[in-house]
Length: 247
Length: 331
Image 1 (cartoon, rainbow over the protein chains, first blue to last red):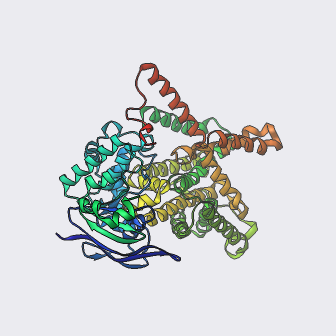
Image 2 (tube, rainbow over the protein chains, first blue to last red):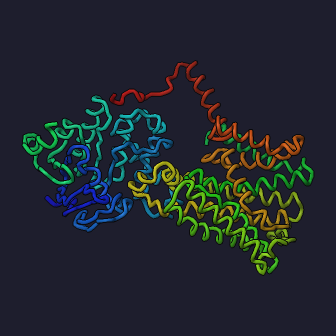
C-alpha cells in the first residue's frame, strides 16, 4: 500500500522543552491509524506540526510524496488533508447546513468565481447528503451553537469530511462525549471509512474507542515513539503498559 | 429574507423616497447626511461586524474619499470618475492597512488603525500645498450625471439615496455569497477557518479593503454634500462616531448601520431641548444599551421577536428544539 502521509524525524521544541523528539511514521492509504499516549506525550503537538499550525524545529512531512513541511493549513487542506481539533471548533452562529457548506466551499472554483456564483457554492446536495449521513437532518437549519455537545462533535467530524479529503486527522473525537453518542460517532466513522475508503489518523484517550476503530496504533511517550502495532499487540506491549495503560 | 422583512424594507424605502417632499432644506440635509454616513458605517460593519477586524480608521477613509473628489472635480475630472477613483484609492490603502491585522488583533489592531487616522489627519492638516491645510476646500460642485444636475438639495439627496441602494444591494449580494460565510468564519474562529481551506490572509485583507472602499465612496458624496471640507471633520471623532453607529445599530447585522446612522444623525436634533446636556443623555443611553443589549437596537428587536415566536410556539404546543440538548455531555 502507498503512504498517504510520511513523517520523518519530526522534532519540535519550545525553548528547552522537547515536545516531539524525532518521530517517524507513515500512514498507508485506506487505514485508520490511532495515536495514543499519556497527557503531555506530544500527540497534539505532532498533529499541529503535521498540519501546519506549528512549524517543526526539524524533520520532514510529506503528503502523497510531496514535501509539505511548514505549509499553511489552508494550502494543506486544499491538497486533501483535513482535521478536527481537540476542543470543539464549529461556527456557532452559522446553521448546521452553512457549517458544512463552509467546510467545502473553498474547494469550489476561484475566490472571484465564488463571489459571483451560487450562495451555497453548488454544495447544497453534498451538504444534505452529509447531514443525512451523520443523522443531523432535523437540525439542518438550527444554529450550530444550539446543538448538544455530542451533536456538535458529529458536525465537527462531518465538516472534516465535507471536501472529500484524502486524509483526515481527528484530534480526540470522543473527548467529552457520552457513551451513547460515542457509539454513534464510532459507527458513523466506520461507515464513512467503509464507504469512501478514506484514510484516518485518530488521536484519542478513550482506549475502547481506539481499539475498536483503528487498524494500527502508535504509542507516544515524552515526545518519542515507543511502540507500534495492531491494537491487540499494543494492548499487551509491556513498555506501553508501563508508560500508559498501567496507569 | 422573510416576507415580513421584505415588507419592512419596502416601507422604509418608500418612506426614504417620500421624506424629502415633506421636509424643509435642513431636514433634507439631515437625511442626506444619513445616507452618506450609512454607506461609511456599512463598510465598517463589514470589516468589524462580519469579519471581526476592529478599525478606528473609517473616518480617515471618509476623509480620503472626500479630498479625492474635492481635489479632482475642480481640476476638470468628471464626478463619476472622481467617485470611482476615491473608491479604488481607499480600496488600495485599506488593503495595505489590512496587513497589520494579519499580525495583531483586537485592541492592538484598534491602536494601529487609530495611529493611521492620526496620520491621515496630520497629512490633511500639514500638507497645505495639496489640501489647503486648516483652511479646507470650499465649493466642491454637486455633480451633473448624464445631463441631470443634482445641485438642488432634494436632487442631491436622491443621488445619495440611489448610491446607497446600489451599494447596499452589492454588499447584500456579497454577504450572501460564500464570501459572507467566510467573513463570519474569520470572525468566529480563524484557526478552524484556515483548517477548512479558507485563505484567512486574503479574506482579512479583502474585508479591510472593501470596508475602506465604502468609507471612501461615502466621503466622495460627503464633499459635494457639505461643500466645505477641512481636516477636523475627519479626525478621530468621526471614526468613533461611525464605530458607535455600527455598535448601537447592531454589529454584524446587515441593517444595523442604517439604524445606527439614523440615531446618530437624528438624536442630536431630537435632544435639542436638552441643550448642553445632549451628550450626557446620549452617553447614558449608549451605556445602558451596551450593558443590557450589546447586540444593539436590532439585537433588541430580534430578541423581542424570538420571545414572541417562542410564546406562540409554546401556546401551539410545538417544541422549541427538536434535537437532544446539551445535557448529553459526560460529567
